[in-house]
Image (tube, rainbow, N blue to C red; front, side):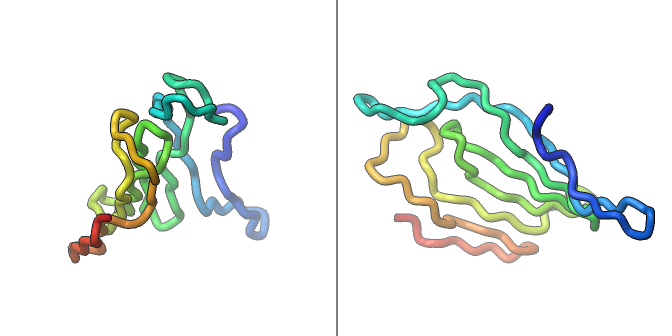
Length: 121
């Protein structure tokens, strides 16, 4: 996507070393704040967001979003495609889920097969 960061590189004695590359995708931005003036793109706006960071060891970090444009899960993926770890957040999944306070805290995570579930408030 034009104007977006695509890679982080460094010159090593005339050779270009790539530390990371970035992938983007679009999501429909939707929210539910009736009666409030919101400083955000209008409902139904297609928004470009980073969906994956590929790092030099061949692994990547993938980002999953809710329809409010918030990251709901970050997954660390091995070069072979297997999940190394992930962390998910207890956020309202859709604009139909109304919440007085949106709290972003880990609700669960998995580190190399060891599952951890946090208290959900």
